[in-house]
Image (cartoon, rainbow, N blue to C red; front, side, top):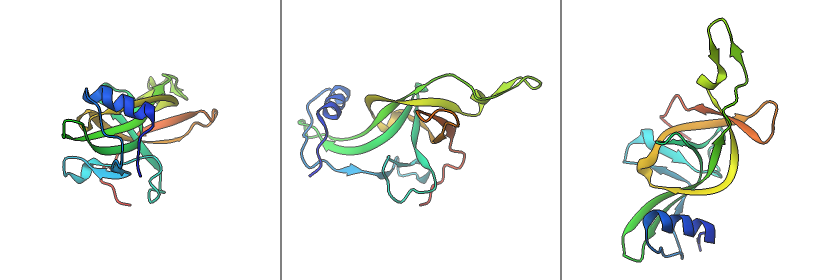
Length: 155
């Protein structure tokens, strides 16, 4: 039986503006958005994705999100809803390196992020770009977040 935590249920209800049914919720770990393979997403914990950690997305407002759930749920009004749940990633704005000769910093290639405990719910239309993360070389609490260049995914 799949149910959301109280915090997850609350953020989804705030997003959709009504109460949701929180019993036997279909929760997916891998999904295609808009029937286009370029929009194949994975959530944290998807067992077959062993090549890299690529459950990170950038939203249209430029914030980063670590996807944890994709749910399709029936609201009390009997509407089918597709909602992504995840943990917000805080962009630190720091850079690992700088090349003075060509005036470029590592920020133009990747972002340094920290995971927060802030649970976020968004509609699929807000997803902008896919990313993957690698551990920060000097700080275990931080990650380097790179854009996923090849958006066509296979397992």
